[in-house]
Length: 64
Image (cartoon, rainbow, N blue to C red; front, side, top):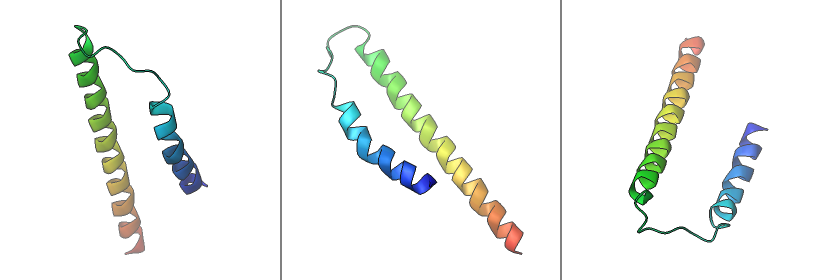
């Protein structure tokens, strides 16, 4: 079930990201906004990696 939801979210993500008309890259908040978005993406990837790693490590320890 989780795998199916993940695949569904992955297929819908490009549609959502391209749905808006865009924004002005010369606005004074553009760099801050892009930096915050990049930070959020990196933080999400780091947390997902940590959770996956800890779950796989726990399952290996349970088998032993």
